[in-house]
Image 1 (tube, one colour):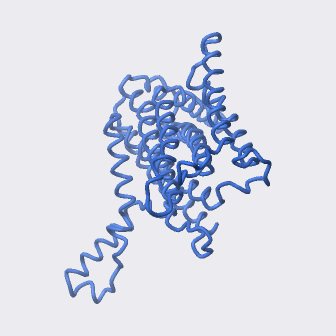
Image 2 (image 1 turned 60 degrees about the vertical axis):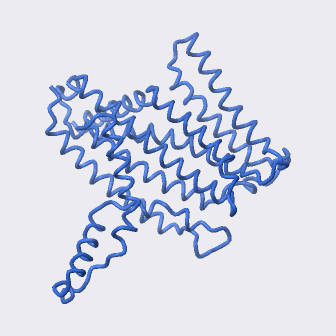
Image 3 (image 1 turned 120 degrees about the vertical axis):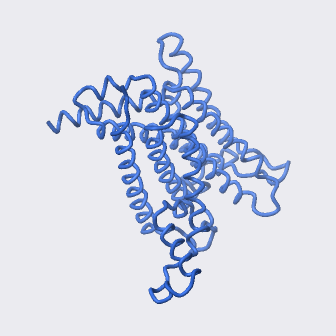
Length: 342
C-alpha cells in the first residue's frame, strides 16, 4: 500500500515538474531575470562607493524577486488553473488523498523552481566574475561573454531545431540544453582569466560566502513557493502574487517593525501601557515568519573574519526554513481539504 501511494506521489510530482517547465511564463520570467542580471553590470556602475558591492546586493535581490514571481505564477498555473478548469477532479476522484495531492504539487514545483534558480545563480556567478567596469577603458571579460552568451545561443538553436523537426517542447528543450552547457561554461570560466590565460581553478571567482548567501536566498524562495501554493488553493493568479508580495514585505520588515521589542517581566507587564505594547510586538515577532535570517549580504564584508557566515548559522536557518515550509503546507492542506472542486 505504501509503495502504491509513493508511486502515485512521484507520478504527480513528476507531472507537476514537467508541466511547470513547459509553461510559457516559466521561460518568460527566466529570460527577464537573465536580462536583469546582465543589465545589473551596467546599472551598478554609477555609485560613489564600491560598485561591485552594489552589484552583489542587486544580484541577490534579482534572485529573490525572480524566485518570488516564478513561484507565484507557477503555483497558479499548476493548481489554481486546474481547480478552475475542473481538471483536478480526475485526480481527487481517484483513491488519492488531497494531502498527497498538495504535497506532490509542492515537490514538483520546488524541483522546477530549483532548476530555474540554479540557472539564475550560474548567471549571477558570471556577472560577479565579470564585475563592474569602473572606467570606459576597462576591458570586457571575454571568457564570460563568450561562454555565457555562447551556451545560451547554442541551447536556443538546438531547441529550435528539435522543436521544428521532432516536435519537442521549446521551453523544456531550452532548459534541458542550457543547464549542462551553462554549468560547463561556468567551470570553463573558472579556469581562465580575463585575457584567456590559464589560472588556478576558482582563483578569480566568487567566494564561498557569496554562494552561501545565494543558498539562503534559495531557502527564502522555497518558503515563498509554499506560500504561493497555499494561496493558489483559494485564489487566482493575481491575488496569489499579491499574497506572496505581502508575505515577502512582512517577512523582510519583521526585524525592523517587531524585532526591537523584548518580552518584559511579569511585574513590568502590569505597570505601563508601553510595556503591553512591547509585549504585543514581541508576540507578533514570534508568530510572523521572519525572512531576515535569509538575507546575510550586509555581513559579507571582504576580509573581515568576524562577518563571515558560519556553517552552524546555515544549518539553523535551513531548519527554520524547513519548519516554516511544513507549517505553511499544513495550512495549504487544510485550505484544500475544504475547497469545492466539483
